Amino acid sequence: MSLIVKNLTKRFTARGTPAVSDVSLEAPAGGITTLLGPSGSGKSTVLRVIAGLERPDSGQILFGAQDVTHLPAQHRGLGFVFQSYALFKHMTVRKNIAFGLGVRKIPRAEAHAKVEALLSLVQLQGLGERYPAQLSGGQRQRVAFARALAIEPKMLLLDEPFGALDAQVRVELRDWLRRFHDEHHVTTLLVTHDQEEAMEVSDHIVVMHEGRVAQAGSVREVYDRPATPFVAGFVGGANVLRGQMVDGRVNVGSFDMSMPHGASAPEGAAVNAYVRPHDVTLTKADADSPEISVARVERMAWIGGHVKLSLKLSDGAPMTVEMPKSEIEALGINEGDLVMANLREAKVFVEDYSI
Amino acid sequence: MKPGRAVLGGAVVGYVGILLIAPIGAIAWSALSSGPAAFFRALAGSGGGFALLLSIGLAALAVVVNTVFGVVVAWVLTRDDFRGRALVNAAVDMPFAISPVIVGFALILLFGPQGWFGGLVRALHAKIVFAVPGMALATIFVSLPFVIREVGLVLAESGHDQEEAAYTLGASPFGAFWRVTLPNIRWGLLYGVLLTTARCLGEFGAVLVVSGGLAQVTETGTLFVFRSLEDRRDLGAYAMALALAGMSILLIVGMEILKRRRAGANPRQGGALRIA
Figure (tube, rainbow over the protein chains, first blue to last red):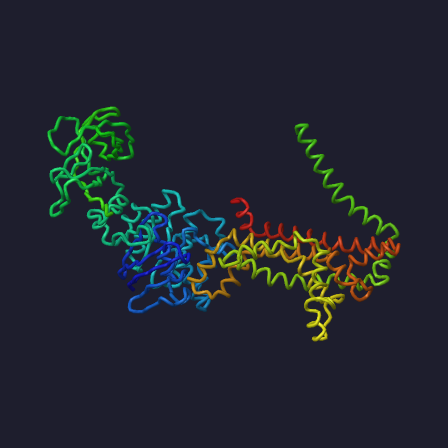
């Protein structure tokens, strides 16, 4: 079932800025859609309004063709997974999972079989009689998933479900979610501030910023064609180089590049270039290219198969570069070396300075 | 053990011993020194039995009222943000701060013959002041904060997530309260009830002012102790004092046993403790 949110606005205080203003989005049936944004961007609020846990000030929520804006949470039939797990502390794993079945008056034998099936789905066979306090974080979150899935939800809403877990468990559970989804195709809406998680798990991404939708699209669209400076900076962790238009070209610090095709900006306009760490190539040789700048390697961090280099450009601006370990080794670059930086790609935004 | 520690330990034992255990020991000694038969005679004699039952009855009533409303108030104070919330929150502590004598006086001011609502009370042919209803009001007032504070603490700590999870799974607000909230707050609630009961049994000042202290009519256990001392019936005073203190001590011991048994039989309590 697809989800459509139309012009949603939600304020928590009567006169304050709205937590969510005029948000419209769509989560296609059977896909994983991710609401991505920094904390305070309103993404969790949107999710809670969809779940019926918060009342919107205005706007509409549609499940398929059904308007559920005024339907209480109890009757929306959604599976909600909280960052804090929100397991019922005084109930065993089995009773937690069976809670929604009990509310629906499912016959005992049927409910029992269903709980067993869910326990094996989330790989917790044999732990049914444990209490939440006796489980690890990853196990608790899996119980929460099983509990949400027990009611055969029309949609799964996940509010930072991996946020409280260790890095390794997070990756495991994330892979599990993707595999589960590929088999069952439950329409899923995931909220996260982790862009890597968003890109790895989702089919569609909705980037949120200050209570509004900054950009919505496929993972590649959002990454390759960021619509706003915020998206360019937030997704992909770009370096920001500041400069201005000189002779119709973009002049940022020691770099000089042409405007993207079809774009233009007045002479002297302030521009920012967003450069992804892996869109920079370093060389030690003297290459003669106008988009090349001399920089000093301040620090190198060897992270698995690639190297993260902190550079200081000739104009003093810092820049982070990521290159494959093999390339760095082949070039023989070390800390303190002077290198040439060549920008393979940059997103240029003209600063909006309306007076 | 280092000498400093030994001194500190000794000081703690001395402090608790002199201030808490010695008085109760003295009462017990005095009450029982003439033998159990004399003890029960003194306790039941000259209105003592009635006074004890009235104390228990008032405590039971106050516990029921303050438990039901206490849970509601605690719920609203922790879950809702409304105009005047801070005021209500501060007001709940008033019974801790105001002397019970003043509470009794205030009730007379409101419901006494010359009081603000005195006419209304007369018109309804009711009797509040110098009667049991006034004593009940006073007892409820002085023991009001305990359940609210104990339950509020647990509610604030456990957060709203579990109830919201229950809602999304289809539970009605009442269903979520009954099956999720109540089990979560049960220890706080039980502790609040215990403190309320103990406070009610020990109430003296407010009840003294508002009751008039008529033997067999409006005399509670503590008032009986007071009158017995004035009338030089010391054994009666000791006996009632021991009975009241004994009930309170039993409540505390029972609570401890219950807590431990739950913790032993049910590993989740242990788990929760380890995490904390």
